[in-house]
Image (cartoon, rainbow, N blue to C red; front, side):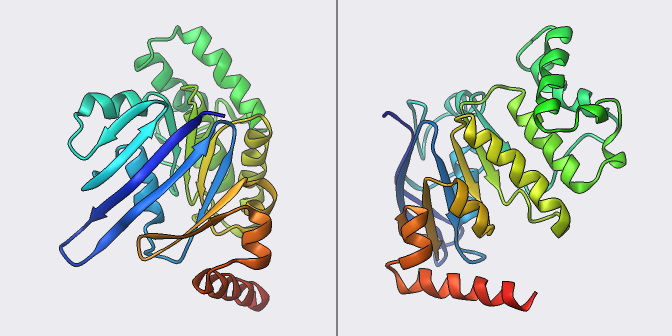
Length: 252
């Protein structure tokens, strides 16, 4: 199976003393789900933003859908990648003055030059996939956080990406809204969408991921199947992280 993403020795520093990414290497095959976990400040968000060209890097190489990018690649290559890779952020970033359907159809109409009726038809299909088609004519302020994040996912899907990146998509949500978003992501995985998900949601990682990549201090500490990672992680740092999460959940 051909990898959709290959990352080789990716290195990025914010100053001479701080390595945000330290020789990070891994790959993701088509139709697979990689969950990225690690403590705060471990480089997870920097990694996922680098894949999408939102962050530059110092050394190494990224190959996304056969498009190779190095530290000195020009903006045209980055734009090629962004046209084929979707991203869902912690914050929903919806346009408040546009309806839900208009938020979803804006980029397909303006960037991909699709006909309005075609974009709207596909937008309604995506909203139905997310279980929120009845909200098409509402505005973002009329929706809950979980509903807004599902709109953000639909907006990313509207451009028909081949790879979807999620940067802690549930971290800004109330606990009761988290499952709404995770369920939508589960359905995408079942449909064969290739995804990289930065998250602390262990249940989702256990049930949906094909691999778990654990980071600490900008390095890949461990990468393994969820069965192995959550039952017998090989690295002491990984085990300590999982124990801390277990303790925090038992307190709640």
